[in-house]
Length: 413
Image (cartoon, rainbow, N blue to C red; front, side, top):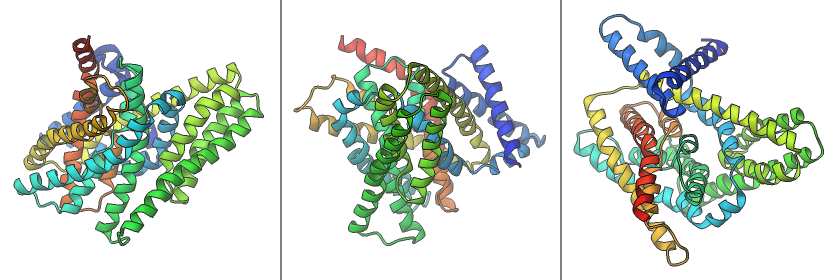
């Protein structure tokens, strides 16, 4: 299909599902869109089993969309910038230690815990998945998804300090997880030899290089914004920052997500305060909020439709259901240990570990990374299990965040 035809179908579906959700379903927008798309997809599968053959057209549409390329090298840069634009640097600085530990040590530790537990589980169920693939599964499912987290947090009444921890972790941990994923994928494909020195160099280049590059492009954009007082031009500069900055980071083999988050934080704090008029701030906020909402709508519709092209068997489905408590248990441990280690130096609310565990949502990034695995049975197993976890995470965890936070805070009071 032509690119315009694909966009036309996705935007039309997103608009139609948004209308249905607003008028009848009345769930938070992203959750409602994914649920409606998922129900429609299951309906098409049911009709196809009756011999009506309607499913084929939808499959052709989805097969013409490279989901991992579309998200990781397209939508993600816009969504991360829009999210980082409204994060207060002072609030982030106050939570820097817990955010830093969760986004680095927490992700790496979770990768290996999930990897070994899933390897034991898959093999106990008769699903032959090599350990290295299970570690890849651990890497792609460990980070909380910034897109899912930020979109659902908007409709949840989470305390400010806790919201900063959740947001900061979500914005930075996917960059670390992608580095871990790239290293492990290199072992599978034979792309490079893994040595401790090589891993340290790759991490430094991707993560630290991403921070430095983000500061550089953010600083250049700030310099340009300060010398212009025209909101159309200033919005165009931020668009160039997001698209050109992400593409150049990719070309330099440094972390595009980390670069855009750092640049977004710089523009969202110093840029909005010192380089923009009130009129520009209002128009910039309105523009990026609209971009964020439209891309979120399209993304969550895509996630709901993706079930049409996945291979599911009863064994895969059972493995996915078993993987959900494994993922939650490992999340509890990977969040709890840093909190215990930092508690002598700073105060935490009594139930912060429970809340951080439940709000650790997984989303489209996990699906996109799973889709990038080499073809074969291990990929089919991991993709199906990942999709089940993502659906549970968004529908069940996402819908109950407000209730869980409210219940825990009620206990504290």
